[in-house]
Image (tube, rainbow, N blue to C red; front, side, top):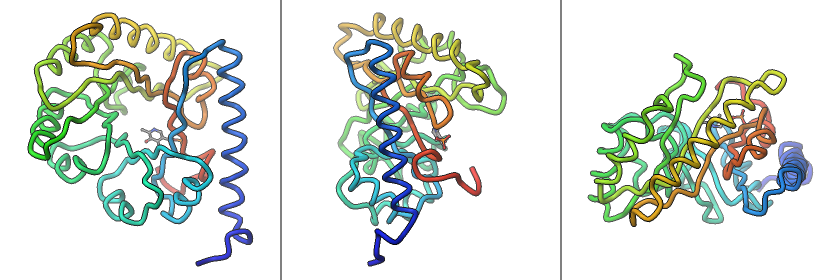
Length: 240
Ligand SMILES: *Cc1c(COP(=O)(O)O)cnc(C)c1O
């Protein structure tokens, strides 16, 4: 095994993690929140040994974007991290990840959710899902329009092997606080969804997944419960 103290990739990750945790704590305090937010390490393009180091340093939740890359790295992960799938997911790939992740953040069509339900049933499990919302109405992004959330939530309620946990969004890139209004809209949608599903005996709406390297502090100010962080934790990627 490589000597870690002499490998700058590792020392950078521990410094970054420390700073991110401080920023998270400060944002929680500023917003007066007494609930919790989780830090997710987004692992795309990151070597498994660096991911494992971050797990040793206290990262307990990983986010995976690409099925192929994930399958190649999955066995190398140590320390039993919790793993969520956050990337765009083709229906024909659901079967490869269904027993390897505990939540799918990118549920964005009835068709996809039905396939997740079918594969979960076959694997004898119930999959937690988040509805992905295209909050900035951008052509380049997947996700459903905000107005369609209630109808999609209703259709999930009829499926026995998926459980609705909340919402996920990737708003337009933040410029001088421009993402605030999108995060505020997501917070309202989330609150409406909680009200709508309260007491239905099937959903457990408690997860609002929003905020990335450039905007996680703002997202926390608007109630995010999972911030998905790649580049400011693991270093900037060569490709996206
Ligand atoms: C890459 C990615 C992230 C992390 O992005 P950074 O800006 O590097 O923090 C978060 N969420 C999703 C869905 C991603 O694809």
